[in-house]
Length: 508
Picture 1 (cartoon, rainbow, N blue to C red):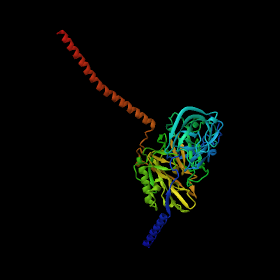
Picture 2: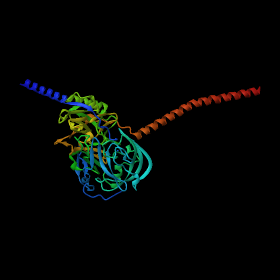
Picture 3: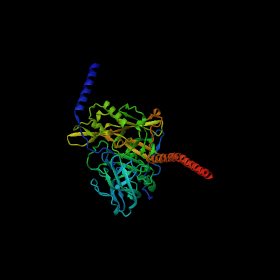
Picture 4: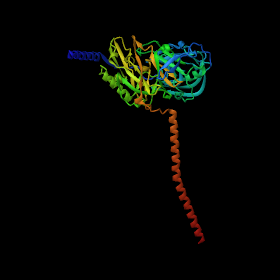
């Protein structure tokens, strides 16, 4: 009986593999998959302010101590999806010119189109704003893909579905760009929410959120919910894409508690990744592999990007655990789509992906997990096929927790206490199934050392460069002195000898 049952199970598995592997094929991928091109005191209407406090295990509890910011007015103030970016409406200048601005936690400049471009419908006309002032400084920013150049200026801005009040901020007026604005996107600028260290041309350009905290007196916290999980990256039309809460966190947007991880360095939002799992399989890599160069949380990056060694290990583990093992390499590399006949979704064939982050209690960690629905992503091609792309890519400049992962969570950027929080997003649900999980605490005793190599940020590199140049100059001076002094001694000695000869000759 046992043998018969075993035979039936094997036969079922083989038939399932046969059906799965024969019902899909690959087609070229033509959709953009990189980083989006890709960073006055007023009386606020009192309602409530949510304060997040640690309970000692990396968890948080919500309280309402002061009641100063109406977070409910900010709910659903984002539109878009991971394929085209999440953006918020702002009013720039006097009178206010409305533009959609991409939300990017991986850069620090607030920049808007200031001239016409074939891929955007309108731009910020600085000549029409009576409050715009140019600083006379040029600025250029390069992203993972795409770049722009322009001039720095100062003007006023307000956010219709944001904190009450108008603030004076630094604006980069984009005059030329290459690969930054893309077809079918509905945003005309970028809101860099990272730290001053990343601001261009230098950290003296105060970022947008820093200015908001100073001028409006709100807490130095913002939180982000991105609700495009499971949506096709090529769906047309605007979507209610989520919420950017400025000044705190809104409890109605997440489920359960918030787990916090320390911010390792204040430039990007750099965190410490302790390990990765594919299904229940630990990749068993040195934790420094995960933090090679850096590990950051970046809403302006579409995919989960992994250092090359980690990426290869993840693909190998997925291939080993998946019933579908004969994918074209182009699918893993992001150049091809895997397509099934209409109605054949592949998610049941793929494992969960888990990332372990160090908790604020550094001897512990917690785990954030995404289901295949978040990283095997639907792409609309035609009416007869269901096509999907791989939402993970290799990276040469660090691990990036991008929109692929962030769409499963409500992420709290608690800059005041130098920590990032993750909670289950209440919009990361598909057909009643939660697409993300959080678990912990787990012991981090086996990775008690520092997994982060520590970034060499550009200002530090300049200091090192100048120090090396000074050392080289000092050594060069010493060498020159060593060469010159013997020559002078020899020349001086020669002159004395000659004069002595002349004296002796005259005496004779």
